[in-house]
Amino acid sequence: MALPESAAFDDRLAQAFRAGLDLAADTDVTTLVFGEHPHWDSLGHMSLVTSLEEAFSVTLSEEDVWAIDSYPSAAAVLKIAETGRP
Amino acid sequence: MTPKLLSWLENPPPGIALVDGSTGRTWTYVELAAAVMSTVDMLAAKRKSVVACLCRPEPGTAIGYLAALAAGHAVLMLDAATDAAVLDRLIGAYEADFVLDRDRVERRPSTGRPVDEGLAVLLGTSGSTGTLKYVRLSQDNIDANARQIVEVLGIDAGERAVQSLPLHYSYGLSVLNSHLLAGAAVVFPGTSLLRPKFWDVMRDNACTSLAGVPYMYTMLRRIGFERISLPDLRTLTQAGGRMAPDEVLRFGRLAADRGGRLVVMYGQTEATARIACVPPERVLDKPDRIGLPVPQGDLSLAADGELIYRGPNVMLGYAEGRADLSAGDVNRGTLATGDLAEVDDEGYYTIVGRKKRVAKLAGQRVNLDELEALLAPHGPVAAVEVAGELVLARAGGTAGSDLTRHVRELVGVPSRFIHVRDVGELPRTSSGKTDYAALTATLQEGSQA
Image 1 (cartoon, rainbow over the protein chains, first blue to last red):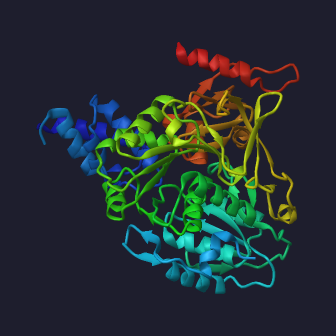
Image 2: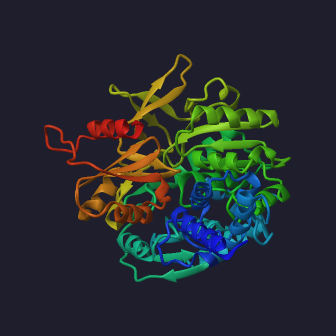
Image 3: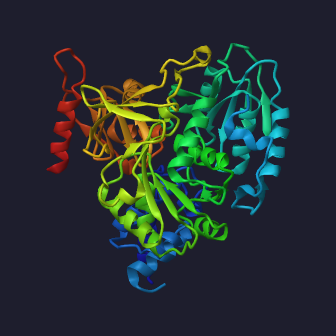
């Protein structure tokens, strides 16, 4: 994948994390892990999933909801959801 | 006198009492009794004291709570995840003599102000808004409600509940209390129900029941709960706010198909936990009801339709600090619930409205008047609940996005549930108070447009 597209992907993903988990603009989202930030609890996770679905215009499956537990795992899930390939 | 809830301290039944799902460690009743008594030794005091218990979703918190009860003190249940400044304010207001964090005990300089002999537990009424208002519950309240729940759910020593709700929350605490009274077991999952490990713990420990607030059932639907194999699960309980009848039917059928049951219940912290229950065999034909009163309880309607509960589990009264802890039984067994209700020809009650200004946001109870008072420095703001979401009507003052962020931290729910709407002016009644009926009508109109 070309670099500009990838940068756009990361931007959208970071933005969706900030919106879904109510994080300040300067938060480093790439190190976030489920349960380790006070906003990323069960309620926050539901909000994050909705935010990711809106940002990427996708419907995440039940397995996706399970699989997302960090920024990298969300990136992996959304790359597949969006492009159909890893 | 030893509370009935603690009778196993002297006569431990056979079997397991607590399981830590994270580590796999178990406590038999004999081992639990020993762990509780060793913490009791650290809580020795000349007079009845206040123990602030920092609640974490771990067996250590249960042991600490039980030790404070066994020592005969009053235990103030605090969410350990609360902002440190808020915790300090609460510990200060109640002049806690001890702060208990699992098996760590910190002794504080005692003011020695008297505590009513009957007082056992102090539970919060509102999420994490930092309000000092707590509910005063007696040993008799705790014992009575645990007994009522054991009877209504038919809990026996073979049951194993997953402790899916926090211990500082009345519904969560009632799961622990009722199972210990029955000589049954409670399993701490050590993780969120949105993590696969939660379900592994439930399956591996043969959990028979799961308690949830309405929003947890929304989560269960989202993760495909119906496809998770849980061979031992028989009972789903639901309380903590009204669940949509469609959702009640969905989970009622699902439970029935698996040979289990969904038990819809209604309660308030002011009644220790549970007030009413829909017999599971009627849940599919009465999915919008709160049901019949629990045993030894009585429901009736006041002239204005307010639901009135009488029973042995009604709180002694409220408190806002240490000075209130010497007060005795103010409520005397009667609770005006603040909910408006109707009753059908079979005696089943339905909640049709709310008299008290309380919102339920994703399972969190938020006192709207208290929230408004906290927001007063941000300019004229009125808080109302519209369709399960919090709407802040703002007439100038702090910018909407800042207000949302601030309220998010106060109530602890994602900002998705919080909406700020600009109104030119807040509508007033003829006596100059905020006209919430008019405001809600305007906001509902706006949300439909």
